[in-house]
Image 1 (tube, rainbow, N blue to C red):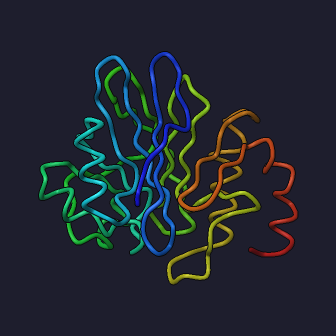
Image 2 (cartoon, one colour):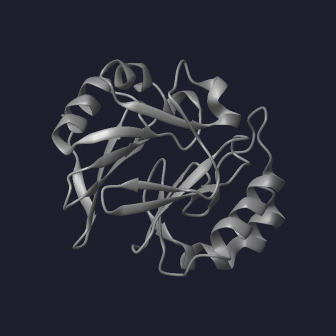
Length: 205
């Protein structure tokens, strides 16, 4: 049976996580505690459950980290339910449909919360991460995992590009205690991963 749990909370924010589908995708819901407004990150699969979760938590918008098949299965059902779906222009053609285009380095307001977009191409041309300002939360999709970058063996992926994205857009601007919340598997921190960048470059994946 599918369930969700709160994996982070403070006075203003709470972050819920669930795991769905055959690829065990992480789906996150960021919710403003004062207003009840919420966004869902990656409508991956199990649309009935995600719709139930969204209704219960006040989700009004979906933010897609990228357009790969396993991250977008529930997109049509979310849109049919009146929930807006957002994706970068570079990955938009991968989705069956969408409502809004995500730009780089802009603020998305979720009630009192401010979510900054960070374009991090490499895994896909339009991969994007989300940093919740005033919290340690960084939702990285398939850009950064414990142990290295996401898979770049796909068509239109680039190892050199993802390394540049991780170094310039994540490691340099954000602190060591920043929580990395990836699209699959367990979380880590930027501090735990940053020392291994040169090893990743040397091994080539």
